[in-house]
Length: 373
Image 1 (cartoon, rainbow, N blue to C red):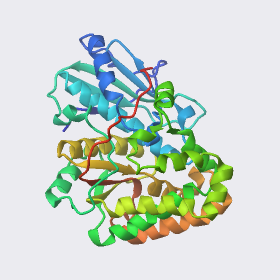
Image 2: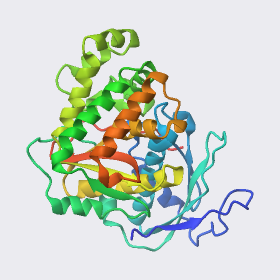
Image 3: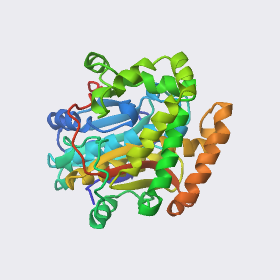
């Protein structure tokens, strides 16, 4: 186990805090160092949908709903990022000889813009989790060697990194990877054929280092390991009016084909699934997604999350969780049906995140983060 304890949240207290929120020691000096390390946690398109509040003996993690992406069904991607941050805090604390106790309040469905998702308390004790050593070196690697499959024992080691109840890792059989890759390509293409999702994508892109440094979030194109000239093409299609015309000439098809080629050339393709499509499950899934990614880093593997397919499966299977454009609904239902036929291991479960692993060079540039707070 990773030394983390899950406790019930005491909603009866007016401040929403746990009755045992007073550990013996003041850990404030460690808190800053823990957060500096943990806030490198991943989030979809580096949106960082969190607000962190420091305390004398711990931190509060809140969900900043103002940073939610319109395409995200039921906040699935946001809760994945929040879970990754929580797990990163727990791991970073263990590296400083502290035991982190996580108290999770019941998920709220009201209009609170900053609902509390975790009250994390630090106390002396506990051994360092081996994964804490890889928090700083974890990164997204998109460029992978197409002819180097990942050995089965390494895949098993990644699957064993899971700790949370109801979370599971399955691997796409090698014989079905190309079919799944084609489906990823179709899902990626959809995003560039609808104005709202096109706008969402470009709002999160940073075409210069100045842009990235000014916002401290989003995807710096320098981190994407794109072929020469592709960033300039993407910048040209920043305007929807150009993309709409470009799609008639094959722009969206080209982007979908590139995504499919990436997945088809992976050393292995995995899927993280949870039992239910609810915030608590997605939060636990996010915690374990970070652990799996860190284990891949420990093993020397390249790792690339592939969120588009699970997002549009969510659109197709949970239409009440998202306001999809009318012309997109039937397309996403078809994508969901094709996914289920290709991934029977996920039957009866909710796909939260797909990812690819393999061997490849680290990106030369790291994505940035917003200041703490």
